Every structure is written in C-alpha cells, then in structure tokens.
Image (tube, rainbow, N blue to C red; front, side):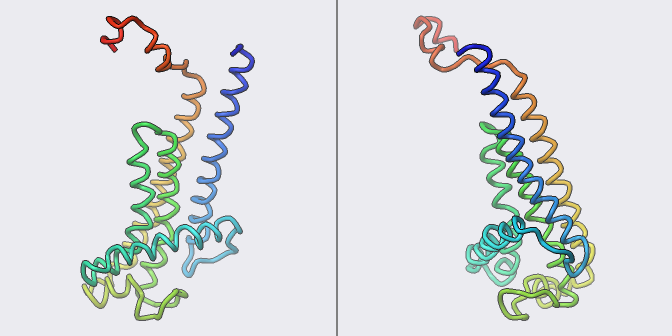
Amino acid sequence: MDMQTENIKRRAILALKLGGLAVAGYLWFEAARVNWDFPPAGEWSFLFRQYYSWIILPMHEGGHFLFMFFGDTLASFGGSFWQVMFPLLLALVTGRKQPFLASIYLTLAGAHLIPVAPYIFDANFRVLQLLGPKHGHDWYNLLYVQRNWIEYAAPLSQAAYFGGMLIGFSGILAGCILAVYGYFRPDAPSAQKRTNLPTEQRRLF
C-alpha cells in the first residue's frame, strides 16, 4: 500500500471515529438540555427521542425484570441502575482492546444517567408520565415508601445530573484524545510479520 492510499485510509478511520463520537456526544448533550428543567422542558430532537424510546427505556424495563427476584428495593432500583450500568459494563469490557469504543460507551453512559435526575426529583411530586401506574414510581417507592428518605430526592437528583455530565464529558474527551493519537501514531507490527520470524526469535515475543 503506497503512502497516499495509507493516508486516505487513516483519514477515513479518523473521520469515522469522530463521527461516531459526535453522535454519542450529541445524545449526551440532548439529554443534558432537555433534563435541565423540571419537568423536562423543550422539544426533544428526533434522534434523542428515538434513542430514548428504543434503547434507554428497554434497558430500564429490562433492569426491573433482572432484579425483580431480589426483593422490592432492588426491583425498584434495578431499572435506573441497569440503564446506566449496561453501557458502563460495555465500556469496561471493551476498554482494554478497543479503548476508543469504550469512550463512546462511556459517553452514552452519561446520556443514560442524566435522564434519571428528573425521575428522582419527581419522587416528591409524581407528575411525570410513566409507562405504568403512579404507584409504580420507582423513586417514590425507594425514597418514601421503603426508606423514608424523601428529603434526599433533590440532592440525589442533582448528583445524577452532574454525574452524568461528568461521565459523558470524560468519554468525549478521552475519545478525542484516542482518535487523534490513533491517527498520528505509527502502525504496530502486524501478527503476520511476527509469524514470519525464525522460530528462535518468535519465542522472544
């Protein structure tokens, strides 16, 4: 492969990486924008609405199913927990071999955590529209019915919002650094080249 073709390939890879990171960053930004006020205000973008409906909500409901056998507290907490933990686990699993992909998952984890904030805050009011009945409000059950910690709803909500902001920003920053580093770093020797070495030398690697 000549130098010009190699440069085109590297630029295409960089563009794809930055494009994927931009999409994840956009979802994170939209999550932060629409959930800044309570109740969540502003028009949701088409992309974020579809992502929330088809990705975040199924993860949330799946978390309830996963933890429903471990008591009322974990059943209530499991929805919010799993919608955030799933992308975090993906970031952890891919972090060693594909760190750039892990940064995208980390950015999405921030986008998943931010919408938990108004849900926690709503424990005091129960005005948000839910998929199920009002008595199925996870955070009302956690903070009032089961624990009598309703006074912590506001600070927990703020912690979820700004925690999601920090996680998402960390993912974007790491992704930018990794993408640029991957573009400028020289290619590592391929496995094929190593296998062509003499037997005595292969033992050293």
